Image (cartoon, rainbow, N blue to C red; front, side, top):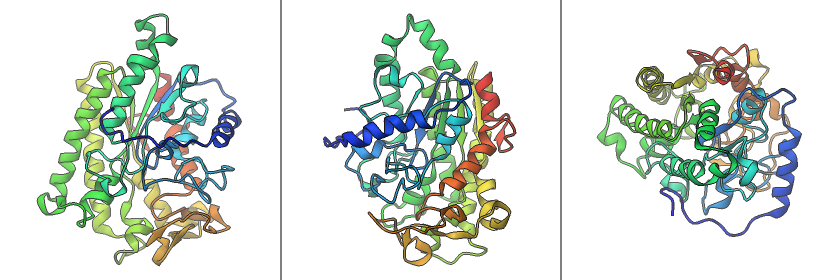
Length: 369
């Protein structure tokens, strides 16, 4: 068994697989791909359906999830995620989840999504949700892809190495290390052991080793997504009193991590030959949407479109629950995750030609290197 991967659920929904196959074709960009493939890692913000196949509490394979996609896919959203929009901006189709039966043979040449809801940088993060593919586990699955699944599709290992070097790797992880670890004393005592600065340092040290391993497996172009303003999400607002729609001390923790993540990207660029690390600043645009919603045509900045209790954050979206009807006016879809309207904005500001939220270059520019 691969590290971090728990037993798969044997039951698969064949109809959903067929529909997903058609959906991949339906959202394919009309432009020529700027990169041969995209390989995606992370948590529920990037999960494209992997948790459908493992016995996890963290799952989104039921309505109303996917209501604007056409059916539930396992994405923690009403529709598309940031990486879905990002793939389209780079000329790629939707990237299939690793655990899907469709992810085999030629179907993986455009990339694979390894992200798993509840995953963290640290293996223990998110354990309260049961099964998940930890970030270490995701890297182990990518190693299997590189060493066993991809070689038969290339004429030589040199050709495979060139393909990997041209591909774009997306890593968005860290939120669960706070929400389902540091900020949750019922399951972890890490906040009693580490100060905010010390915990951020711990995460960055672990992440540096993990990214170096990805580099060793052939990854060269990597986009590191920062942690968003988790002090503004309905889950956290339901537990404490916020100011201006957010809890500052929690957002401060995210800023500590993000500052170090940006420095890590710069450091790895100088120490790993041939690497191109880009830092994607998700925090600022997301926070600006919450504080100035009208500028983005949102009217509900701090309440979940589908949730229960205070701010809709006390209990997240339940099976067959009736969500809000004006989803494009909400910033948050459920207790933790943004709507696809927000995801489209975040992706455009990171992946498009006119991107402003990436350092030192945009993902669009990275793909063309």
